Image 1 (cartoon, each protein chain N blue to C red):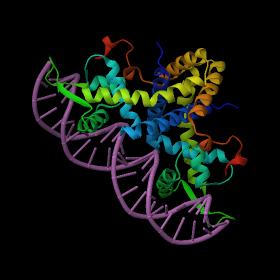
Image 2 (image 1 turned 180 degrees about the vertical axis):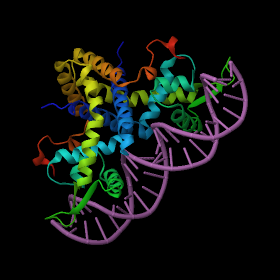
Image 3 (image 1 turned 90 degrees about the vertical axis):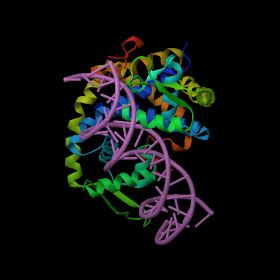
Image 4 (image 1 turned 45 degrees about the vertical axis):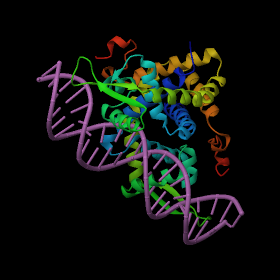
Length: 155
Length: 155
DNA sequence: TATTGTTATACTCTATAACTATA
DNA sequence: TATAGTTATAGAGTATAACAATA
């Protein structure tokens, strides 16, 4: 009876629910769910990232990322500096205001993360992350895959 | 070490991969991934649905669904008729052309569904659907939950 | 009064293609 | 030649609020 349609639909339903809750949680702070992901990627990147690296890690498009960066830069949350060795590239960093905003956003998102985990045992949460990664891998063309080790960023 | 961030990010990555592959698969047929979901909801609904019922089942907004319906109606894939008993409502149905288009779309999506299932054992696929449903339930406000039994559609 | 759907409106994300500058 | 980023452009989904018609 399972035609294979259930899995994509369940995935879609879960993601959309997450996305909507996130939009609602971050809206009072003037940030969208996708902008939060960008800021989080930057915050956890450690060092400054180029726009291309950022796009890869977010599984997004350089042109899309640029549009988002323009909005975030206008609000003073990110800055774009010249790359130290590559004059073509620009490095993206969180500003001081961006770091403060991200701290508030992280707190605002805590109930969502907690709510998701509360619906699962720790073992189930791990299993779910693993299964999702397998599915994502099966759906992602080799070339677009996000490297697990930062050293492969430029591939 | 798990702050709870991994799960939302894994969910996002898997959904985005699915969405992109779907867009690419359906684009030659002139339909977006979300439009496919609308058509699939209609195709599996059996009887005609009102726009509100459709929006609920797609976990979407009536206003959003209307915008999509306008596009699909212009292409002749769906029709909107007067509701038999409620003069306010309109029932949405697949036209003959819509049914033919959906058959082609379903075939075009087959490799995607198969690819997802191939990455999992049957037991894992079932488990994944179940876990996703639990997570979606935890993230969805009671009022917005999609009824499992069609009889509750008007709640 | 509440509900179905429409309209107007606005914003974000998405992505392609052509372009400049640099590697 | 290939790559990083910009620009122009377009489309799609999202959602809110005000509104008309009907229940």
